Length: 201
Image (cartoon, rainbow, N blue to C red):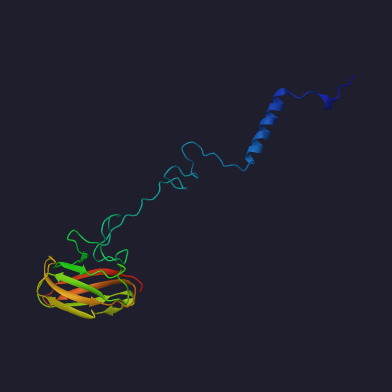
């Protein structure tokens, strides 16, 4: 009696092997996210690393004269972040220090309605600066524009504002919004600057 080859029972070991191969093929076509090898492979960034397997580059750090801590005051020659008048200081007035290589420079502001420094509006500022001689002032701003005070500097004989140096009053009208750097020069040689941000009219 001849045995039919088509009805021969499958070998148990061979069936398991075929099933294993099928599962492997299905897994490769699944489209899911591949599992990274332990320890982070060359093409898989580890925590804090990059896709090349190397460490991430260090974060840049601020440097230079305008560098400041996140919550610290900006340098006097840096443009302030806003156009508001400075809040009252410990002395109770709206004032800002300037910067100078050979003197001290302070600006006292007289806030107007709205509490902002605006282009085209007159801004009264009183200055105190150490050194000797008369004072001249100019301001440079966007596009290289230069302006002088609309009045002053006018010397003041006395004041209740106690900062070092001699005192002058000035009036300004900045034509455009942006950063304006006021430069103070005394005939005795002392110089100083204070940068202001002027807002739109």
